[in-house]
Each structure stands twice: as C-alpha cells, then as structure tokens.
Length: 376
Length: 119
Image (cartoon, rainbow over the protein chains, first blue to last red):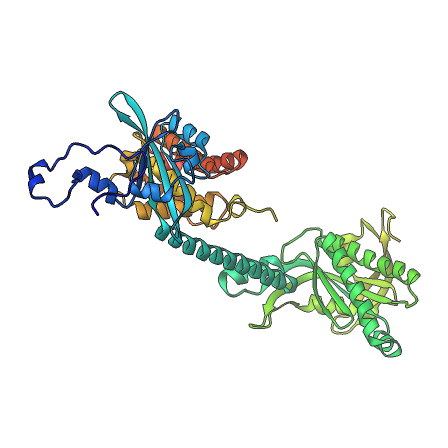
C-alpha cells in the first residue's frame, strides 16, 4: 500500500531524511518527505535531458497525463502529443520559458493543462524542468469571458450600425450642420441667412395625369424624376429641402453660406428642365414643369419636436413660389434679385413688369441658358 | 468597410492573451519590472487590455490627457519605453499576429511615447 505506482524513470529514492523515526514507522519502505511531496503534488513534473529529450525523472501525475502508449523510454516529444520541440528550443534560446496549453485525458475526463518548460542547472549539468498544471477552472473562466466579450462586441457593432442608420435618416430630412447642432445641444435655433436662393418646381396638370393614368405608376415616375433632381441638386452643392406632392423645393446658400448660391441654383434649374426634356423624348408620358427662382434673406429652422422638419421661412420663400406660378410650362422664371446675381453667366430674357401678389409690381426674367452655351 | 486589427484577430479574446503574455515578459524583465513593484497587476492588466484594444482599432477608452496624467508620476524613461514596446511586439508575435499588423500596433503604441516618457 505504501509503494507508489511504479513507473519508469522514477528517481531513485533519496537518502531518507526521516531516518531517526525509522523504528517507529509502520511503512516497510519509507520514502523521503521531498519524494512524498513530489509524488503528491498537484502538478505533473518531469526532468528532461536537453539534447535527447530523454525523460530522466517524472512524478506520478506526469505519468498519468503523459503516459507512454507503448515505449516507456520514449523521449518527451513522443510522450507529449503535439509538442513542438523546435518551438521549445527557440523560446529557451531566447532565455524565456516555454509555455503551452494542451488537453490531456485523465481517466474519463479531459483536463486542460498548461505545460511549461524551463532550463535547470544541476551542478554542471544543463537540464530541463517540465511542469504541467491543471488549468481547467481557468479555461472555463476564460471561455465565459471570451464568449461574453464576443457578445458585447457584437452588441456594440449592432448599436453602431443602428446609430449610423438613424443618422442617415435624419440627414435626409435636415442639413448636416443643423443635425449636428440638434445632436450636440438637443435643440436648434432659427437662423437668418442674409443671402440665399430658393427654387420651386411644380408639374403642369399633375392632378389630371394621376387621374387619367394609373396613379401608382404616375407616382413611381414622379419618384424617378425627383430622385434624378436629388442627384442634380447634390452635384451643385445645393440642398433638396422638401417635396410637397408634385412640388419640389431646393435651396442654396443655407445652412452653409455660399457666395455662388444663385449661380449654383440656376445651373440646377437648367439641368432639371433639360432632364425633363430628355426624359419626355424617351417616354410616352410627357411631364411639363414650371420653375421659379428667387434670391434674398431666408430664415431656416427645425420645426417640431418628434416629427422634425427642417423648413425655411420669410417673404423670399413666397416670392420664389410666385415666380413659379408666373412661369409658362417648361419655363424658368427668376426675380430681379436673382437675375442681378447671375446675369453675367446666364442668358436671360426680360419679361417686363408683372403683378406679384403680396409684392406689388415686380420686374421678372426668364432663365434661358448658360452663357457658355452648354445648356439651352 | 475595412476590418480593424482588433476585429480580424477575434477581438478581446486575443487581446487578453497578448496582454497576459506581455506582462509575463514584463515581470521577468530587469529593466522594466521595477516599475511594477507594488502595483495591483489585475487592474494593470485590465487597463492594458483596454488600451491595447484601442490601439488595435477596437473600442477607444483612453484619451491622451488620461494617459499623460497616469504616467506622469512614474518617471518612465525612453529606454524602459523601448523595452516595453519590444515585449509587446514579442507577445503579439507569440500569438500568431502577422508582422505587418504587429508593426502597425507597435507604431500606434510608439506614437504615444511623449505621453508616457517624462525623464
């Protein structure tokens, strides 16, 4: 019963430290206390020769975890399945200890172990100490930690995506500068823009078109056209403000001031008309628009708390709407204020004085083409 | 969207291993281990894991001001900083990170030397 499990390579019993008590011990073959400690310890320990990897000593647990399948004298590399001896050598040559995690079977259980190899001096002799500890509990904790952090990382990514999506939606209904003010301060202040331009576009006989044809397909076509307008507006650094039924409103010079607001918006107006022209040539259904442009002071603000709308106010907005109603189909009518800002770069026709509701007599012009002649 | 180094190597699970190996080396190193005498290594490893996550492009958690404030009283010199950077590099290599990624992280790390080195 006192005899430890016999296994190869066991160190010969060291001289008995407890010799004095020999007489009183009941063990037939008493072993030394250091030996007893080594055999009972919870770590697997072995001492290995560096060059040959021959196992010179091992304790019971090492034999249990890394027992030989056949050859009891097999070197370390054979006994410890999967051990990369080259990696061991590399680490040891750097003056570090080698550390490696591996699973071993112990009876019916799988045990996670951490195997460490370090250099050992025994007198003049260079030896290697191989030590393996049961780290199953640690591995369980690490598994939980990693699984939890993966979940947290995934949630963080989902949240970020959701945030970006919400931001994108809000940017559709208000300019970025206003969105940022709303995000950072929770509210926005109405802002007066001293010089900006407003474009208003409407389709002639839209209501009748929707009735005469399939309303669904008419709206689908309207959506196509407005989407094309959005791209034109974006191309010239203007902003699509809103659509109301078949009306489309774009602005330039707000929320960021832009000295070229009238010129940019005039270019947009010409390209919108040209788009409609081109489209009519290729489609059975002819769309005809009126466009009005005006430049002047405008107030911009977010309106509403839950249902945000960024809108513009002031007489300038009404004036743009009046210009539009004065336009013939496929005509762009501009106020004198806009005309004075763009006259050098565009060809316009003087339409004379017109009675404008709320504004009295106003001199108006039609915008015909860019002076460079690219757009007629 | 390009994945960050943090994401490509499996996120926090890898950072944790790198940092654990890194401190093993740090505590064995004669030059830098004295800086960690009397330090609660659990908290230290926790901080460093978040910091390394950050320089790998993971969730950001430390501002430059913060890094400067916590390192100022420690009297860290350039030589110690270089050793630390080298040990971090070795730990990342141990865990199978590609050389280009290791270099990218070391570069991010080194870019913060002025916040940490005071003597």
